[in-house]
Image: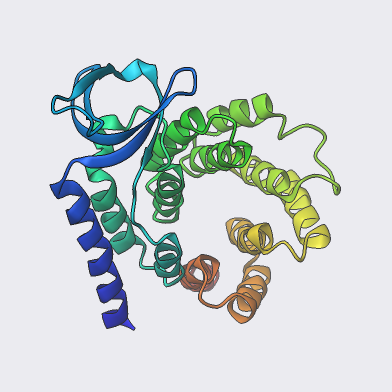
Length: 287
């Protein structure tokens, strides 16, 4: 399996090297909807040199006149997602950054690279690099335009990264602006319930946190996107409150139901923490 993953990563990097070694083939979508197909040659500040192939001399375009760049990117997104499923996060981040490196000079212009940046955003969150998560999330939110799903996904990761990095006031402000904290109850969106629970936990309002996450578990059992992290969150709160037996019971359930997932990996780490806390508690009681 390891050799298979290495081969996959090498193939991805081979694509990246090809892109980096040559000018970038792309379609430019200009203000007013006009499109030009050709080759991006280089960027000089606010000016971009572009060849249409019609004339021997390149033309110079103001970056602000370009609404979007559609690159000819030869990447197998399904293959990248397969590597993600195998949880080779650090290697995949390195590979994706290598792939996207040639496009960096044009990174402030909206493009069809959003889905790859969204994958990087998620990977940085999974590896707890929250500043990087926020950087990509804000860029995606700004560039996604009328792609409502991409915008909402970026906003979700902004909220998660702010919460996990302890910036609860900023998370509260963001979620309030988006209306994600309004009238949370059993009929609310599971994502909003989960984020609300996480926010309450950071604020040490554990009763409200457990109430909200209970709604996720009780009324959204088929929604694995939020059910799995909700159960892990329960175990984390139980641990925080010193309810170790309850934490261990939830951890056992995660190990049984969600093998080969990020929640499983985190539950193993949490189980070790619970064992350490139990041992410390026993020492204190016997002293």
